[in-house]
Amino acid sequence: MDSPAVNVKPSLSRKPSPSFRLRNGSLNALRLRRVFDLFDRNGDGEITLDEMASALDALGLGADRASLEATVGGYIPAGAAGLRFGDFDALHRALGDALFGPLEEEEPGKRAEDDDEGDMKEAFRVFDEDGDGFISAAELQAVLKKLGLPEARNLATVQEMICNVDRDSDGRVDFGEFKCMMQGITVWGA
Image (cartoon, rainbow, N blue to C red; front, side, top):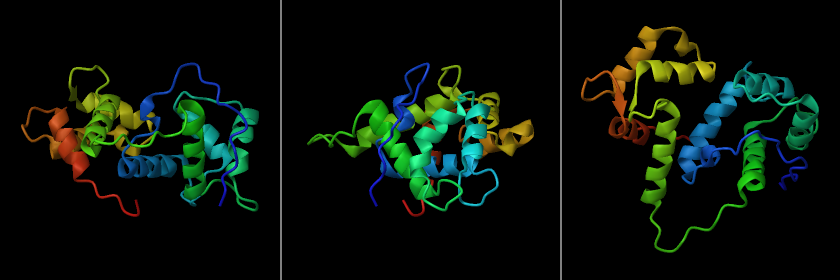
């Protein structure tokens, strides 16, 4: 299936993070699936324009309805109420190309592990809001809250999440612990 071209270049007040599109395919697929599931508020397998607008507003990235419809509308199949995951993936890829240019072919001799490490560090920095090299329960709770996840409501739940990963029992997650946790995630269907 050919993807429609993105007609409207997104207007952003600041340049998006390069982590918008990770180099590691399975990390990207996992992250994109999680975003899709968060946007799909009613869990019906489709993201309507209303659900997308609501999610963007909650993240502080409000978009005017006409621009959103112009950008996303071409990816919604005829007769569908919204984007299915495959449509959402195609939109994500097209926006990545529009914002950053097409993905470059992998350079000969460049190791995938280097890309994975860079992607892991970028993902870690999302949670490490104060940049001290650790993810605290408060930082994790703040990110979960921004994503609208119910786990953010209870600090004890967030602290338990930290304890499940915290190997040295210092009450925080360092990069090594974060990396071990991420490497232990299985991505189904990626």
